[in-house]
Image (tube, rainbow, N blue to C red; front, side):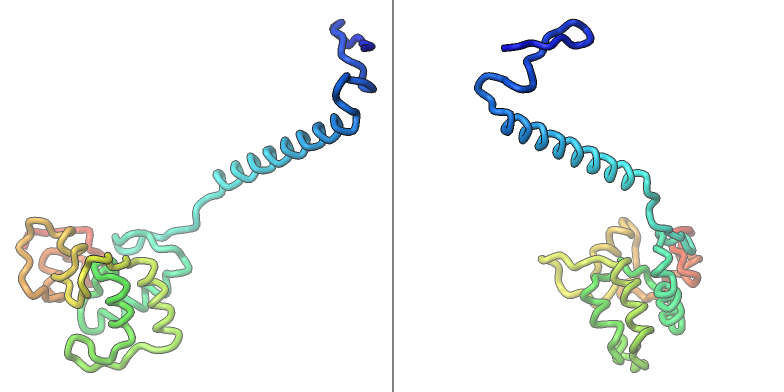
Length: 187
Protein backbone atom coordinates (compact mmCIF):
# COMPACT_ATOMS: atom_id res chain seq x y z
CA UNK A 1 0.00 0.00 0.00
CA UNK A 2 1.42 3.36 -0.96
CA UNK A 3 1.37 6.07 1.64
CA UNK A 4 1.22 9.82 1.13
CA UNK A 5 2.59 12.15 3.80
CA UNK A 6 0.28 14.84 5.12
CA UNK A 7 1.16 18.17 6.71
CA UNK A 8 2.08 16.69 10.10
CA UNK A 9 4.05 13.85 8.67
CA UNK A 10 1.37 11.23 9.08
CA UNK A 11 0.89 8.82 6.29
CA UNK A 12 -2.54 8.02 4.93
CA UNK A 13 -3.38 5.26 2.53
CA UNK A 14 -3.53 6.33 -1.09
CA UNK A 15 -6.96 7.48 -2.27
CA UNK A 16 -6.63 5.23 -5.25
CA UNK A 17 -6.40 1.97 -3.38
CA UNK A 18 -7.49 0.65 0.03
CA UNK A 19 -7.35 -3.11 0.22
CA UNK A 20 -10.82 -4.67 0.48
CA UNK A 21 -12.81 -1.45 -0.19
CA UNK A 22 -13.47 -0.45 -3.79
CA UNK A 23 -13.20 3.26 -4.66
CA UNK A 24 -16.87 3.46 -5.69
CA UNK A 25 -18.07 2.03 -2.34
CA UNK A 26 -15.84 4.45 -0.41
CA UNK A 27 -17.24 7.42 -2.38
CA UNK A 28 -20.78 6.25 -1.68
CA UNK A 29 -20.06 6.07 2.05
CA UNK A 30 -18.53 9.55 2.01
CA UNK A 31 -21.56 10.92 0.14
CA UNK A 32 -23.99 9.33 2.60
CA UNK A 33 -21.99 10.76 5.50
CA UNK A 34 -22.04 14.22 3.90
CA UNK A 35 -25.83 14.06 3.39
CA UNK A 36 -26.41 12.91 6.99
CA UNK A 37 -24.19 15.72 8.28
CA UNK A 38 -26.05 18.29 6.16
CA UNK A 39 -29.45 17.02 7.39
CA UNK A 40 -28.28 17.23 11.01
CA UNK A 41 -27.12 20.81 10.46
CA UNK A 42 -30.44 21.77 8.86
CA UNK A 43 -32.37 20.11 11.70
CA UNK A 44 -30.26 21.89 14.29
CA UNK A 45 -30.78 25.20 12.49
CA UNK A 46 -34.56 24.70 12.37
CA UNK A 47 -34.60 23.74 16.03
CA UNK A 48 -32.71 26.87 17.00
CA UNK A 49 -34.94 29.03 14.79
CA UNK A 50 -38.05 27.56 16.41
CA UNK A 51 -36.64 28.00 19.90
CA UNK A 52 -35.92 31.68 19.30
CA UNK A 53 -39.27 32.48 17.63
CA UNK A 54 -41.44 34.43 20.07
CA UNK A 55 -44.80 32.90 21.02
CA UNK A 56 -47.99 34.37 19.52
CA UNK A 57 -49.09 37.61 21.07
CA UNK A 58 -51.31 37.01 24.06
CA UNK A 59 -53.26 39.77 25.70
CA UNK A 60 -54.38 39.60 29.31
CA UNK A 61 -57.77 41.22 29.65
CA UNK A 62 -59.58 42.07 32.82
CA UNK A 63 -57.47 39.80 35.01
CA UNK A 64 -58.52 36.68 33.11
CA UNK A 65 -55.96 34.42 31.47
CA UNK A 66 -54.30 35.76 28.32
CA UNK A 67 -56.17 35.27 25.05
CA UNK A 68 -54.52 35.28 21.59
CA UNK A 69 -55.22 38.40 19.54
CA UNK A 70 -57.23 36.51 16.92
CA UNK A 71 -59.72 35.46 19.65
CA UNK A 72 -60.13 38.88 21.27
CA UNK A 73 -63.27 39.71 19.28
CA UNK A 74 -64.81 36.38 20.33
CA UNK A 75 -64.12 37.18 23.95
CA UNK A 76 -65.64 40.65 23.59
CA UNK A 77 -68.77 39.20 21.96
CA UNK A 78 -68.97 36.53 24.65
CA UNK A 79 -68.82 39.07 27.48
CA UNK A 80 -71.26 41.43 25.73
CA UNK A 81 -73.84 38.75 24.95
CA UNK A 82 -73.72 37.11 28.38
CA UNK A 83 -73.55 40.35 30.37
CA UNK A 84 -76.83 41.51 28.84
CA UNK A 85 -78.62 39.46 31.51
CA UNK A 86 -75.93 38.22 33.92
CA UNK A 87 -72.16 38.21 34.43
CA UNK A 88 -70.22 36.10 31.97
CA UNK A 89 -68.65 33.09 33.67
CA UNK A 90 -65.16 32.07 32.56
CA UNK A 91 -65.71 29.48 29.79
CA UNK A 92 -63.54 26.90 31.57
CA UNK A 93 -66.13 26.39 34.33
CA UNK A 94 -68.31 24.45 31.87
CA UNK A 95 -67.10 21.79 29.43
CA UNK A 96 -67.17 22.24 25.66
CA UNK A 97 -70.07 19.83 25.32
CA UNK A 98 -72.23 22.09 27.51
CA UNK A 99 -71.25 25.21 25.56
CA UNK A 100 -71.99 23.46 22.27
CA UNK A 101 -75.58 22.91 23.46
CA UNK A 102 -75.95 26.23 25.28
CA UNK A 103 -74.73 28.83 22.75
CA UNK A 104 -77.14 28.15 19.85
CA UNK A 105 -80.11 27.17 22.07
CA UNK A 106 -83.07 29.60 22.33
CA UNK A 107 -84.10 28.03 25.67
CA UNK A 108 -81.52 29.49 28.04
CA UNK A 109 -82.17 28.06 31.51
CA UNK A 110 -85.92 28.43 31.13
CA UNK A 111 -85.79 31.86 29.48
CA UNK A 112 -86.49 32.25 25.77
CA UNK A 113 -83.70 34.24 24.09
CA UNK A 114 -82.78 35.03 20.52
CA UNK A 115 -80.31 32.30 19.64
CA UNK A 116 -76.85 33.25 18.46
CA UNK A 117 -76.30 32.66 14.76
CA UNK A 118 -73.84 33.08 11.92
CA UNK A 119 -70.56 34.94 12.41
CA UNK A 120 -71.37 36.01 15.98
CA UNK A 121 -71.96 32.40 17.02
CA UNK A 122 -68.85 31.16 15.17
CA UNK A 123 -66.61 33.92 16.59
CA UNK A 124 -67.84 33.27 20.13
CA UNK A 125 -67.51 29.50 19.65
CA UNK A 126 -63.87 29.87 18.59
CA UNK A 127 -63.13 31.78 21.79
CA UNK A 128 -65.11 29.37 24.02
CA UNK A 129 -63.47 26.34 22.39
CA UNK A 130 -60.02 27.84 23.12
CA UNK A 131 -60.87 28.85 26.69
CA UNK A 132 -62.93 25.88 27.83
CA UNK A 133 -62.15 22.23 28.46
CA UNK A 134 -63.45 18.83 27.42
CA UNK A 135 -65.69 16.79 29.66
CA UNK A 136 -64.00 13.78 31.19
CA UNK A 137 -65.20 10.34 30.09
CA UNK A 138 -66.56 9.61 33.57
CA UNK A 139 -68.08 13.08 33.98
CA UNK A 140 -71.85 13.51 33.69
CA UNK A 141 -73.46 16.07 31.41
CA UNK A 142 -73.13 19.39 33.15
CA UNK A 143 -75.76 22.07 32.87
CA UNK A 144 -75.26 24.13 36.03
CA UNK A 145 -72.15 25.73 37.51
CA UNK A 146 -72.51 23.87 40.81
CA UNK A 147 -72.24 20.57 38.87
CA UNK A 148 -68.87 21.56 37.44
CA UNK A 149 -65.82 19.88 38.95
CA UNK A 150 -63.78 22.85 37.70
CA UNK A 151 -66.06 25.36 39.46
CA UNK A 152 -65.97 23.33 42.67
CA UNK A 153 -62.16 23.00 42.48
CA UNK A 154 -61.90 26.79 42.22
CA UNK A 155 -64.06 27.24 45.31
CA UNK A 156 -62.63 24.82 47.92
CA UNK A 157 -64.07 25.38 51.36
CA UNK A 158 -66.34 28.16 50.08
CA UNK A 159 -69.94 27.91 51.15
CA UNK A 160 -71.40 28.66 47.72
CA UNK A 161 -75.20 28.97 47.81
CA UNK A 162 -76.98 26.17 45.95
CA UNK A 163 -78.12 26.53 43.28
CA UNK A 164 -75.40 28.91 42.20
CA UNK A 165 -76.92 32.21 41.19
CA UNK A 166 -74.60 33.68 38.60
CA UNK A 167 -75.44 37.23 39.65
CA UNK A 168 -74.25 36.27 43.14
CA UNK A 169 -70.69 35.92 41.83
CA UNK A 170 -70.27 39.66 42.40
CA UNK A 171 -70.53 39.22 46.17
CA UNK A 172 -67.05 37.62 46.20
CA UNK A 173 -65.75 38.74 42.79
CA UNK A 174 -66.31 42.50 42.56
CA UNK A 175 -64.74 42.60 39.09
CA UNK A 176 -67.04 39.90 37.66
CA UNK A 177 -69.15 42.41 35.67
CA UNK A 178 -65.93 43.41 33.87
CA UNK A 179 -65.00 39.72 33.39
CA UNK A 180 -62.32 39.97 36.07
CA UNK A 181 -62.63 37.15 38.59
CA UNK A 182 -59.18 37.47 40.15
CA UNK A 183 -59.78 40.16 42.81
CA UNK A 184 -61.66 38.69 45.76
CA UNK A 185 -63.46 40.05 48.81
CA UNK A 186 -65.00 38.21 51.71
CA UNK A 187 -68.77 37.81 51.43
